[in-house]
Image (cartoon, rainbow, N blue to C red):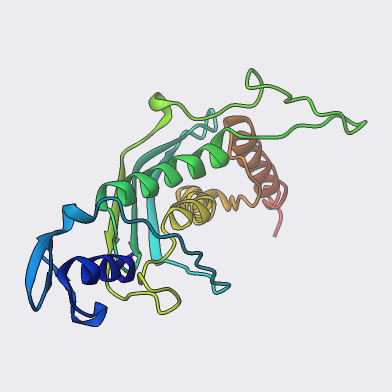
Length: 218
């Protein structure tokens, strides 16, 4: 686009295209200047292709409380910190990060494809396949840093939305395991719905009871 503007400006200012400068909303040449808005009709179309992927780097942490009687998991606090390279639009980026975490929490606690013994899908509609709503969203703090620009694209931007989603399952499962450490519960399947967490707790208690020595034995 800048090359097209320089070419158009050179014809109007009577100079060579490489003599045209574009800065601070002005297009100037040796013989004069014009406002950038004067070239609103100039258009350019290009295609950019890059097979090198971009990744953000960061960490997630969660504070949860588990009701051992019902298996319900409450997310008290959730924080994610990511280095996303160059931040183009802070508001859009922040929304991407928070939305990704919410999507991840939905897959952790609600979303579950259920099949019967004949491989028939039983969760065929949103009446059965649960998605998170506003009332399901806990406190989420997303901190996005622009520390190191990505070398794989001219903008220096890294993928941001994926970083908020991919780690969610792992961090919640580990937080639940930490909360239930005394019971030796280590969840390794999603979703962590109340029935599944309750079953993990019940199985852990049963296993512990089976290994207890009988009274009076040595």
